[in-house]
Image 1 (cartoon, rainbow over the protein chains, first blue to last red):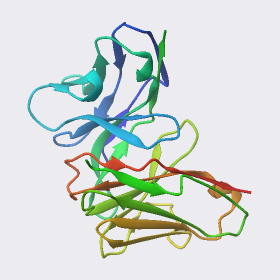
Image 2: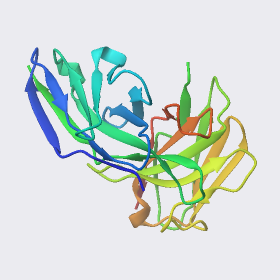
Image 3: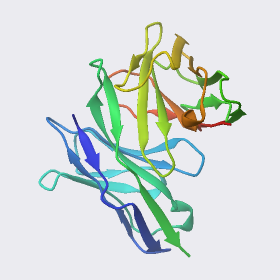
Image 4: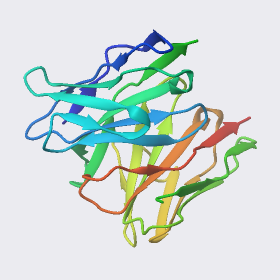
Length: 116
Length: 117
């Protein structure tokens, strides 16, 4: 099965500073990777995805992610953090479900806290 | 675009009650819908995947008689928690996709907070 790992439960960053939320993946074949964000008591919102192409993927709200095949990583980044970026971030990978259909497997999530 | 409406947002009920949660895609046809359960400060656990007009595919360890899923149309899926007990209390989230291959992002509802007394 495909999987992603988010090694940090929480990341704290000062407003205006660059932020990085880490994700590593373990897949057989080509990885299909996603980042989602969840605000309190809400569902998830899609930020960006990598399927093929440029290793630097740009997404919503100024976020971007860098696909690194040699390090099997897909870290989420933003040049300048906003307080409103504080939320729970999930890395995800396309996987195969028990019925043979496609599904998405999520990481454990990283809470981002941007300090004013 | 790609809005998913989940209703109700919060349910509080007594043990033994059955609870139905609706998930609707408002502006697209949802070929596939997913139901997740999320525990506090934890990731999403996929419960089942449903395709319109066919039986849901449940993940290992999820009781299909406990969590009934119906995907009767391309815009509506329902999850019924039958004879709910306190251990079923959780945050349930649905998502929908226009395709089955997993290339496109899923569109999520805002979740249902279920509390069983």
